[in-house]
Image (cartoon, rainbow, N blue to C red; front, side, top):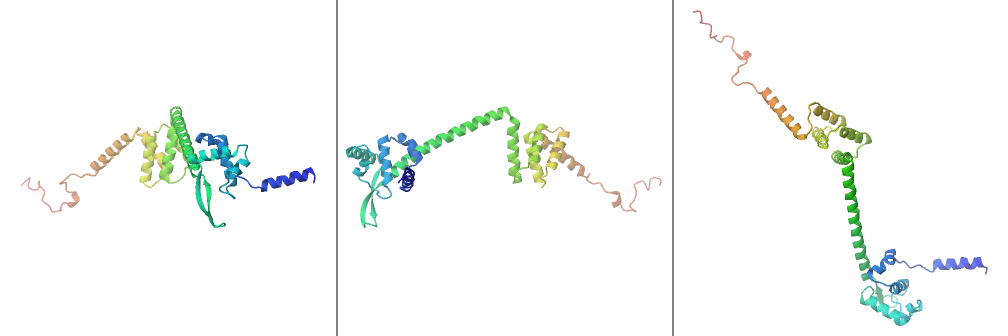
Length: 259
């Protein structure tokens, strides 16, 4: 058999001999849960046997490592004492008898707790970073902050995403020094009237601009004055009888003046 055939046969045998799945998180964090290199290797050897032999003997484990059986037994004892490795009973339906198996439940719990702590710290760091970025953006570009808030408000109210032209309309209003408060008030009035057209909202803002109204309080005061004027205009004087209701033959107070 030539060298190429040997290498090909070995490669095939290597990949078909099976693989052991070791979680990467375990390999990169085992020291953080108090495991040393030898303890980790014993766990790997136990995992290697798990499919066919869930409870490998100390001699089997020692035969694959440079440590003696006494050393391996001591390592397994420490793992069991810390409950990172537990021995459980299970029923073997093939052999029709009870047997032992190693369990890694506590080890998984330890890793899960470590992962949760790391994830919590990561989220806190991301939240702090976003807050710092938000504060920087707020100070540096206040118009952008108003723009984002207005786009969000419009999209919520309209129930859809805004088009590019609609966003440009909002940006133009802000550039024309219309406040965020006024733009939202115009939107509120447009929606209340059942009109969600941007041209209609623009006409509302321009009308307020002509009247010199810059705040919502000023607009509400103008509305109240307009309502008062309308009510005064529509109020008629009491006891005033229209001419068309005066009888034609009604006596005139001057009829007997020359008698």
